[in-house]
Image (tube, rainbow, N blue to C red; front, side):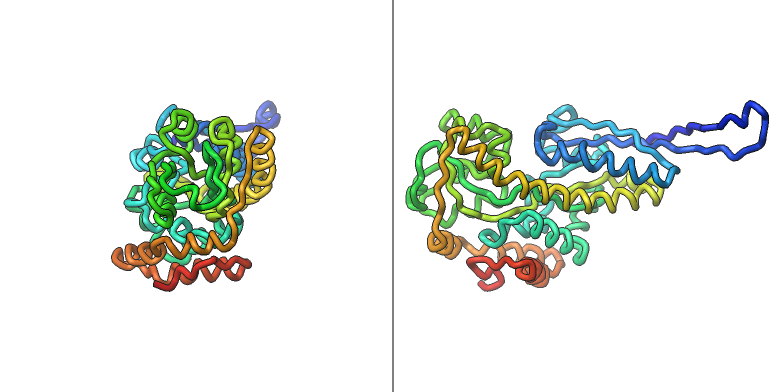
Length: 357
């Protein structure tokens, strides 16, 4: 969906027939899609930061301007449909929720496969995005879906548990039904008799309200945004850690028609959007938790000993991730070690060494 129009700005010299150069700009249209509503933080900041920043930088050069058409909240695709929507050209640019596509985008599960390491969106976003640029796996996965990878997005400081009834210790979770998305559900395998139920952020309120599940795995900002305290007033601070769940991608056919200067601006702004989103995530995390408490929620902390025991009881899903990457011809072993090394350099060491079997 690329459209070109030409507008000429002739100055007053035309009235006197003076031969002056014509100043012209080409307008490039872009259809942006996400299935989540515009109140979702990453969608809101795409409108508030990404598009105006691209506009500003293009205006400085003066050759091109953008015409944005933003479509959110299911007007073109549902939350799980962004990957296919961009692939088919229903949108030119999209924010793919990668956690829904573990089979098509297995490399994107790197942070999700290493829980209990870093509850810092800034560190995780930077580390995952650097891995995506240093190793071909993530970009290859999107290329197979007719897309060009621009940048990783992290929109949560840490997954926590939100429950309809009090939870005072990990043993209180035994026998409960807990909602989650994608690989995050694998964390529950460290607890006896827990039933994981697949769901998405927009589903959790109803799932909790109707009693379909007892708890849901999400993060404080999302809990505040979607009024989770009304149906799950007990937060268990597990500090599973930050996970990359959003990736900005572009339809490859659309991308190939873009001028190089527009591509360069989009690539640069995507990285700034990555960092901007992570900073906002950390800024709002503590306020969101306070809002949750103000709305009637109660917070219970999991002890360091319980977190370590939980991690040790889990299967080593990081090594499972490595095996998948190695079987796909990628260097999963090096990717995992490099990723954890980047986090350690940033000051984060997990309660379990996921590089060991």
